[in-house]
Each structure stands twice: as structure tokens, then as C-alpha cells.
Image (cartoon, rainbow, N blue to C red):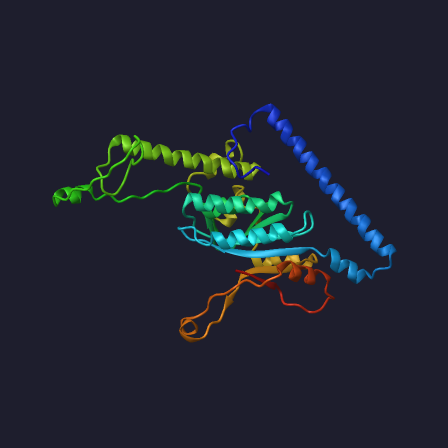
Length: 326
């Protein structure tokens, strides 16, 4: 999967043929894996294993985790750990990952990294579902666009495929008060617009050019991740506007109107065990305890927890099985 990468070779005929071949090979591989699973189940039945035991062994798992983003793009380290757990513990073609994203967007590099982290799940052959209950705009939409399917609550805010930069300039204020500010650079465009120096027309033009380049990369990212928005279709939604999910669905930005809770209920009905990946917090005594919960250490042997959940006898369980990571 290379959908979340800028691809300037997409219109080359040989590349198109190669992609079709890769898609066919992927489908053949998935078919083969399914046939092998059927053979294993048949062998288990012939060996006299109880159906309940077999069902637990091959019962699919839905890994559920949340991303609450901000303009500075914090939380990326936790996201990396959550994705790594899914990639390392999930089973290709069997398990599923669901991420609930809440973010108004922020720094392009941080959210570009977040989108790349999510792509790892799809590369591992695990279905990725993105849910938006309130907002996934700009960088937030950059993240959810790489999912196989996007679900959103009716009044969630979605879109804002654009780029914004605001830089206050104090040059005239400093000049009026006889304050000198020196900026030393090497390289013609090392500093085009900054808060202290006089802004030139050349500098503004270069800065605008850089924003347009980032916007073009953003548009390519979305159109490659969501083929229905490819070609001229991306121009109609890459205006910087954001829409309610019901409107965004009409424009191809969202696949289905549904809250994350509704989707997780449907996952449970399909026989999945839902494991919510959380960051463990440990209560501390003394001054730290008075100030509230502080980050603790991760629960060890995560694989053992997952394996235990898969093979344990059926019994009443909470809606989501929590799994802690540091």
C-alpha cells in the first residue's frame, strides 16, 4: 500500500499495469490464506476438538483505540505504540483495527507522520476503520483518509483540506521605537517571512509558493488514499472548506453515517472480541497522589494477554477488554 505517499508516476501506463498485478496478487494471497484457514478448521474438527474451542482459537479481534489531537500534534508517541501493537498482534485478513479520531488539525509534519503510522496497519493486511464523532478536519482528515472505511456521526465536522499559516510581524513597531532586530541567514530563501524583519514582496511570494506545494501534496495524499476523490474530483473538496458529515458523504469524504459506538456494536454482533488499547495510568501516593493520576508503566506480556483472550472459555465480558501500554 503506497496510497499515503506522494506519487508522481500514477499516470504512467506501465505503473497502472503493475498496480493491477499487485492488486490481483494481493487478492490471490488473501484467498489462499482463507483456504488454509478452512483446512485448519476442518483438521481441528476431524481431530475431535470442541467447536467452542475452535471458535475461540479463530475468533477475530477488533483493536480499538482513540486519537485526541491538537494543533501541536501531541500524542504521536502513544499512537505509534498503539499501531505497533496492532501490527505485531493482529492477524492478516482476520482481525480489524478501529481508530476514533478527534482533531481540528495542526502541524503538517506531525499529522503526516500520524497518517503514515496508520498506513502500517493496512500494510500488515489488517482492515482499518476510522470513526469521527465530532471533528476530523485538516490534519485530522489527513489521518482518517488512509482508512479502508470512514464512518462519521451526522453532525461531525469533516474536511478542511487546505493549508494555513499566520505570522504576526512587528517590524514597523520596532522601527517606530528605534529598536533594531537582526536576522542572519545563509541561503536565499532561508527566512522568507518572520516576525521581526521587513517582509518583501519576494519573500511573500516564496512563502505562498511553499504553502501551495504543501497543499498540492495534501491533495495528492487524499486522492491516492480515496480513489473516488482522484482526478478533478479532489479540486471540488480541497478548497479548505469543512462540512457536516452528511454533506461530506455526498462529496465522497465519508463512507457511512454512523457513530463510533454504533459501529462497535455492529462489530460485536459480527462475533469480534473488542480490545481497547489504553495508556495505563497508576495512582501514586503523597504529593503526586494529591495532584492526580500520573503516567505509570505498561502492563507486561501483552501477547500473553491477547492469546489468553483468544483461547479462554466464553463468559460474560465488558463491552471492551482494556489493554494497557506505557
